[in-house]
Amino acid sequence: MKEINKISVDKLRLVALKYYSRSDNGVEYTSALSYAFVVKTDEGKYVNPFALEENYPVFEAAPFTNISSASNWEEYGYKLFLANDVDRTGPCYVSYGDNLKDIFSGDTVTIEMLREYMVKSKAYFKDRSKFYKDSIKKYPLATLKNYFEDKESEAKLIEFFEERGVQLQKVR
Image (cartoon, rainbow, N blue to C red; front, side, top):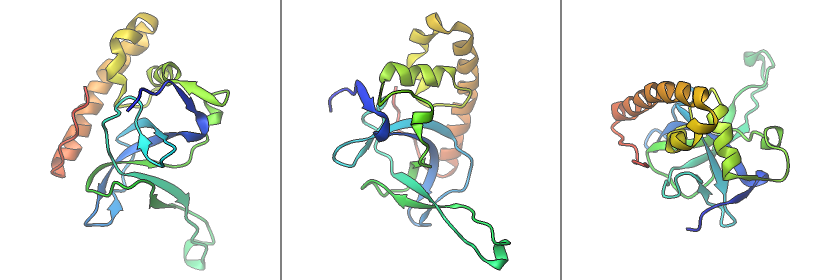
């Protein structure tokens, strides 16, 4: 697969890493274990631009309405739809349809812009560790802070999946 340089913001998704069980027919209801970026290709596949060999199920979340007297007439929740052809138990990505034009100006972004966003973010991005060496020169304090926090988050992430009998793909 060719390297991705310029990415259309319309095809870019900020996704949450979660656990999917095919036998239980669902994504485990937890907070995001990590965040990542994926790009929807012209063929309808989703690709992580920092881990091209990754092949996780991707779910799109659509607002789910349950307006009834039992719910006090309030709308709530999301219904998840499998958005790619990967349907297996293990790690998965969930996209909540965030409009990334609120984050990135213009119609396209570069890999460098995504890296910079991850380095500056307080959220845990599992792919951020791949470019600590490059970012320490530009953002020394943020990179060091992220490094130590990411080590702790990564250990929790690995433990979470090991408890479910899943070994994560090693992407280093």
